[in-house]
Amino acid sequence: MGNDWSIYNNQGKNSTMHGFAVNGSVAGWGLRNIFYGNSAPVGAAGYGFFIHEQGTKGTSGTKVYCSNNVTPAGSGFSSQAGIS
Image 1 (cartoon, helix red, strand yellow):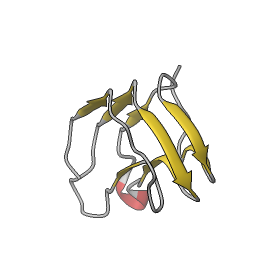
Image 2 (tube, one colour; image 1 turned 120 degrees about the vertical axis):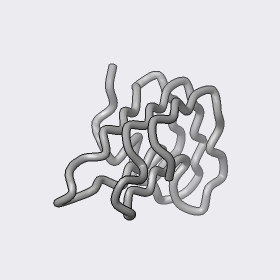
Image 3 (tube, helix red, strand yellow; image 1 turned 90 degrees about the vertical axis):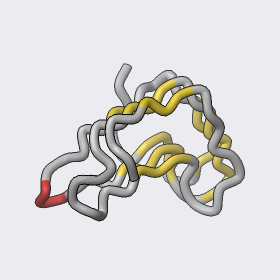
């Protein structure tokens, strides 16, 4: 739930839902994070990367790069478009 983090070279494995998640449910939290070079063998129904957007409060500014590797995640790579 932090801000301005670079999350890289980690593994989100055998999750109960998502491999990695950013929760922006509290105003001012979960903003401008960057994910790259991670591995997410999720093995669950969720996303490899779930980014909770702020809705009417605006977007989180979080970036998920295509350099992340996701297998298998029932909902797909990310809840937002990946960046090349």
